[in-house]
Image (cartoon, rainbow, N blue to C red; front, side, top):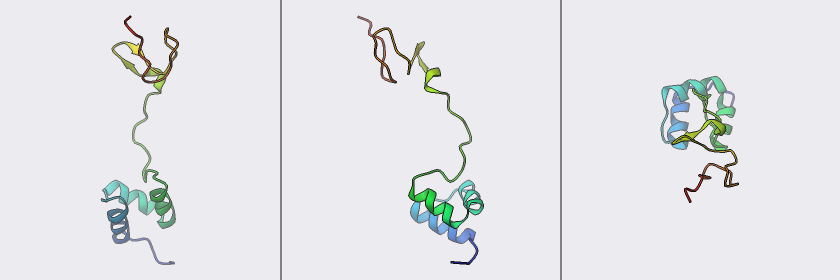
Length: 85
């Protein structure tokens, strides 16, 4: 329990729990430590911080139609597309 967290242990754990070990995941696991890495894996959280931020749903558009806001039809949500009728 008191031993150092090694790259070999990380590769083994990620190979079993996440099916693979990328270089970025290994580096993140070394930084996080053993306990935090296991907690993130068990809780389905990413090991590394996201590299990109996603636009908010209020900015998402498809064919010029905004999604996530109330439409003239009164419907809301990502699947709320105004009817052509």
